[in-house]
Length: 329
Image 1 (cartoon, rainbow, N blue to C red):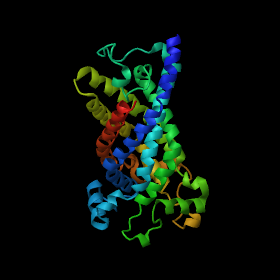
Image 2 (cartoon, helix red, strand yellow):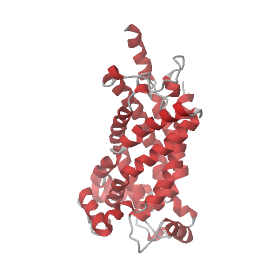
Image 3 (cartoon, helix red, strand yellow):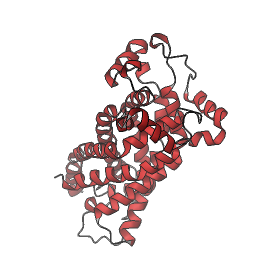
């Protein structure tokens, strides 16, 4: 009992690792994934008369705006993803530990019989667990921790993704013809016209979208265990493959909610912005509009670039995160 009480403060003191390593995850994710994200957002927020598909969107963007056009709106997520991944992955490690120690403690059993007792779980388990108990959470426990981390990071992600989406859907190559000259100008104009509520437009849709983190982190644990038990892959390779595959599971389950979120965030706000007449009062009206315009297929418009992006961007991000987690003292 005394040993357990000594161990918990030590494990809690390692919470900083997730927040530090999350910064590196955000950088890796942006470098690989942002061009895919720009194509995805443009397809999600336009009809088929503008872009017939992802390839035409890429070619037309490069032809009219250059390669830099694919990185439009990259500044908010560069700062945002570093911060968001730090908060999301850092809080995830904390929630996993808390769930392991206070909810699942009595039913914890090691997932992998192949790990010898001499090997500490935090070096082998999914997301280099910061506590022995967290390394043995059931898969749905990892999923619950994912939901909690998703809700936490949504309060940072909503304004970042809102600004990013508005910048990505400015199609003019000339800055003088754009409503927003950059991310700071976008935030300033929205805040002046609509206050904090305007900056946080789409928060409810963001919370809904990130509730699907249950499938991401639950499946990440499952893939990690399968690869660890049935292959001889190294830890970084396991992180890479489990990270990429679980991200694809996440996007398959969550994509329709992301389409609705993007519609809400790019809807004209009206008022002093003079950007048009608002169409939606809430995410449910946006969801209905998507169905009315394109039927069930409307919820999957832009899915291909998103799906292609999911594996490399998140595989690299989680491999970077895990590597830093293992390297930190």
